Length: 194
Length: 178
Image (cartoon, rainbow over all chains, first blue to last red; front, top):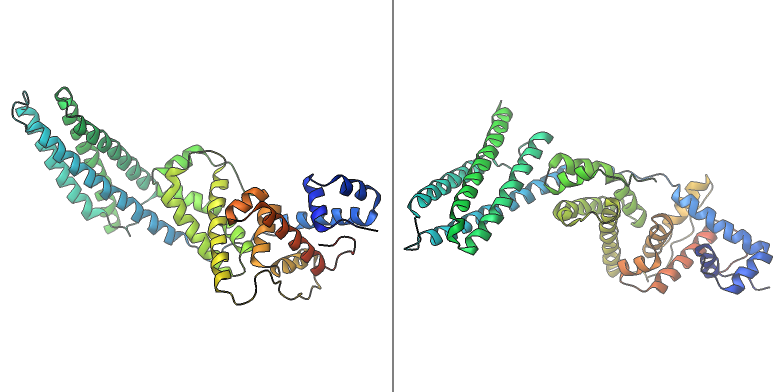
């Protein structure tokens, strides 16, 4: 008597078996037992105990995460400088309306931003331990700065005088966020130093 | 093993923002399922550890790309399975023994689970990967074929050969044949 092959048995389990296999298994106790055995084998495989990692690799992953965040922030810094340069070029064009005051405010915000970036570099040690709450705050501030950098680059590209006030406001917001970021970092640095 | 599929959206969002505590929470939630998947697919425990590490390095790097389509575990599991399969391919390229050759039959005189576990370890790397992905993780043959860069029929035939081999190793009945 011809019996089901393993392909037939697995097809039966998957509901994809041929008409012959379906009819055969109804009449053949041996093949029905084989189908049951396949089900049992799979059930036993699913019931195997979970194997747990023998060593904790989180510290390696965490270091990589910190490096990734630092890399991203440095990228943002480059974007910020590029946006500043583009904006300065726009506002310094002769005849660019009443740009004197705006230019002064912009220069001030840029200088403050650059100073804060430098300060941040001093606190941004990859190996420094941050609490979860501090890390969350840092990530939140960095994201907000990234959003502003994106807005700045778009505004600078638009080169529209009507948006000059908005540009200065964005730079001032950036400075404010940078200041908060430096405060979070420096507070934590002092704490760790103790 | 049962994996908690539901991860709070806020935790994912925080991880995507680079929040280290959230990333660690994800790591803790999925380190065992990822390691278990890799260890079942790979012969070597150290390789499985490396896959665990590589998987989460990829998660850290790419979690911003996760759009919330499907369970996070499905996304992470796919990364882990891909990494494990890459190792299998690498090892096969280096191996001197012919592909598809099964290892010798182990002595099996203890409990049923251990018997099956030991028999499972004697399958080829590819067979083990297909069995685990299909029968335990629930991947379809189409998905396995795609992951392995092979056809659907390759996945099906590997599964059938593996089950026939397991059946033989476990000393089960005589009815069906591969």
